[in-house]
Image: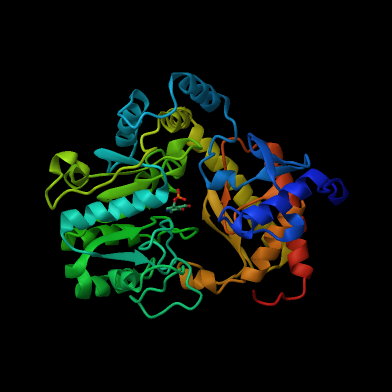
Length: 441
Ligand SMILES: Cc1ncc(COP(=O)(O)O)c(C=O)c1O
């Protein structure tokens, strides 16, 4: 596909202008791309999306993760069509959502009960609320660089530009009441000794420790998650795994199965809703009981309700997605595609001479522009962000969409996609190598 064939149509230009007028920043809250590369999606199928001008892209954003089967997967489409005829939302217990709750409990090691929400942000928010109720404390510990959605407690030191001394948090957004800063302690990912020291001082005021077991792109160092589990057991603090990204992805049982460490509660999202708005808190029954309305009127009751929670269209999409993932060989195939891509990129980096490396797991990874080891947020922050932005833009220019700092591999990505992706990466890396060192953003 030559650059000349990738011209924006007048219709797409009009839609982008309308978006710029009607949407703050012209976007949905997701990261912006350079103006000359902005586009409006018209449709998606499998591992590709097309814009309103008819331009085709290989998609590694995959809806920010839910579309592990690819766009418009026929099984999911059929399940959703069928449910549309039966009713789209009830605000009542329905067949599809009960079946999905059962499947989540079968799949996720810590899950004895499930409470559904519409977004991953709500799932982590309510997991924290349930933990506070059980533990009768207020404060939480989270990890620097960890992202748990956009609520007030989550947006603390998820991407601080100038990190503070641990455990002081830095709010990631305007509009968060300052008092929340006193409720959140920040710890360094993959540094068990520091976590242990912080817990020794603060354990008695903590309601929960929440962690992304695979934090953004950072894999847990051997013993880190097991050590965190042992410490939280010692202090009787509920451990919450945020599995919104990792759930049903690293393995059918998520990071808990993959890394062999079982928390008390987990938040799942993305894949579980098959591309529709659905997420969940799941975990130990004695903690989950806080959501039971029989407790209404007591201090042990967590109020949690949402108009679309338990939505049956999302539930059948989730069930259909999970059924595909249970088919023999699904995860092996996902890992195989990811490994081929990862190995290919690593080889391209080596040949290019650009100081960079690939980090992450086989089905979710990215390039970071540093040759130093990267095991925590500060090391990630020290990588060359300007080069990454240039690399992403050069990929997009050539018809490849990826997240700002993540590629999601799906079961829809083909051999041809892998080959074309490596061609695009090679060209983008050459531009990065030859570019004058860009000014920091
Ligand atoms: C680890 C993690 N937790 C929570 C969330 C929030 O989920 P949602 O965007 O559905 O609110 C995300 C979103 O990407 C996430 O990656």
